[in-house]
Picture 1 (spheres, helix red, strand yellow):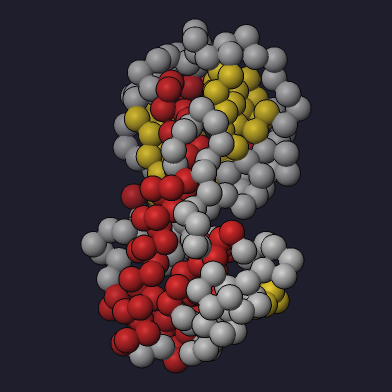
Picture 2: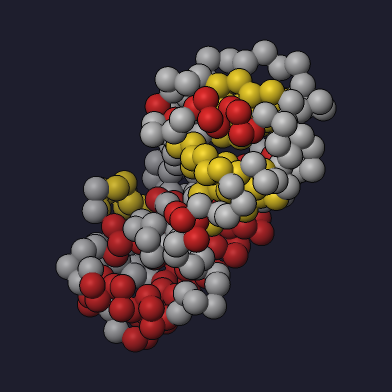
Length: 269
């Protein structure tokens, strides 16, 4: 599933279309990504509209469409945004295509776990206004983090870090990376962390988010780049993978319902 930096990469792909008008809209109205959406109203609102700005918060994207409204997108597990030639023929997995004179903007999602939202008018939708602060924003403090962990006291850290209401954009690999860097066992109870542990977790959350955005979001015309060498990322999917810091074997197991990779030699508290 795309995480914070991959979603940012996708958002920037569509920035090529800003300040251009949508000439026509093609969609698969019965596709599951449109659940709860009036697809006829969406097509009417987007046709002739100009994309004026794009935004990302966590795994959510929002595109301002002038005075017409707001297009919200969530990629789910297999969604992606692409820019194709203006005459691009729609594929069966291309559930939303916005055509402009110079290009076609494509939202494809083979498994259809993604979502599309359409909010008419000039005010951003309520779900966007009420979103939690980004991890790199000043409002995401160590005190706020510790209070949240205390409310999930018995839950394993790995499961808690995937809760988007507190950690927007964090997914499976980023959670593993954060816990590895902080030296925290992924199965440790969230409520057991003291102030020192919370400070370390807060610091590494910010580090991983900044580093992922800096390294992955490079060339939107191609594929995103991997994080730097020395990150757990490069070993976590490798059979027989070893901890980049200690050289000891890594362990893969299910914790909190999610596949988790961790280093017993390093994550011992």
